[in-house]
Image (cartoon, rainbow, N blue to C red; front, side):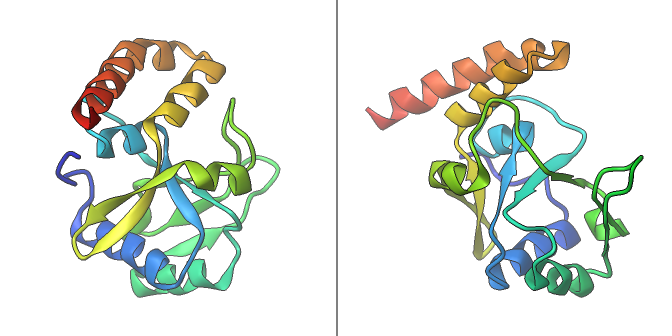
Length: 155
């Protein structure tokens, strides 16, 4: 696994608080791939929650002076505050099953003294393929090469 250089101190504190409060969530998208060693860059970190309105999310946000902004007709759900501005709340994932099914496809990634759940690279690739956006197509070779390398290391 790559060193966790994508999170600052406050961001790591927020993720640790989510874990401490037993919130069911996972890091998905390119951030999950990066945490597994993929040489890719992303502008945000996508977090997929079983239920973003559960009390543990609010408790974690309060610890870092963040807030949850519910969705409106024009805006998706989002977090507000300096410590959580990197995070996007994901409500669905292209090409994947429900959160309940996909939570079986996570691995625990070390983050300081905590381990955070990240969607396995295979499932990140499946989602990127299903989305089929140009930006997803651009990273597929890097993701597939990383997956191959990870599998070879396990042999």
